[in-house]
Length: 292
Image 1 (cartoon, rainbow, N blue to C red):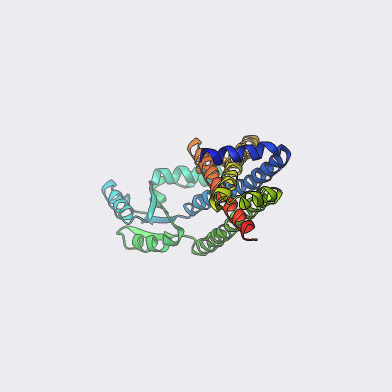
Image 2: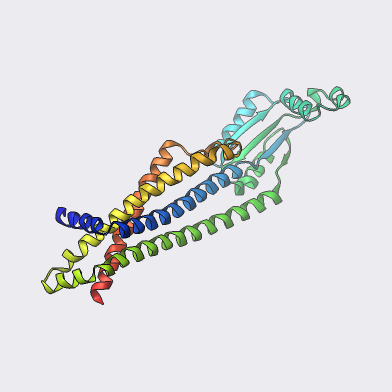
């Protein structure tokens, strides 16, 4: 293994300009793939965020002030289903505060309404918007609930849209991985073609196929791993540069801000993907040439 590794580095050192160009092609390809992956990950987080926004609003009868025990019992039933992200109880007093905030510019409306005139309610956020109808039917059966509301048409449109986006993301990600593989395969293939005389000489001397192929596989791994690290650094710099422009939008969706752990996972994924694609590309390119 050490001999093959030394051979690979010697070959790279002998042709510095070709090595540099090949390295940048691989790095830029992986950079493009990383940007696409980050966009796809952000789209996934945005979809998850908006999926929790549709709510079921259950209003108690106006003359009822629900007891804490009754509210907790309903919350427990809902949470035990595993379909609910959160349940929030809005008391009559809180409903009045919301009403005052919405109508702060109209003093006449503020004077005309008291807390006893407004119903207490429950705001239920599902884990998946497709479960809203099930939760609405459960709430309608609860004692003291007078009305249950949720925007069924809007929810249906959201479900269809998220499914379409996820399908498109899977297809486009597969295409991007394929393009990355083809580019690296082409780069290593061109490196092999530039050393065809050396390969022919090794074959005439009776060198085993594995002995001839191994340096090219290691070369592919070197290109892929170093290209992955470079692509990650480029991506991180782009993110740091664009953060001031995106901060208002990012901080509205806390899950969208990438953590240090996430960025390290991206780095590990890039190095692993680059090394794997480089190794497979080097193996296929070398075997294809040896068959020719």
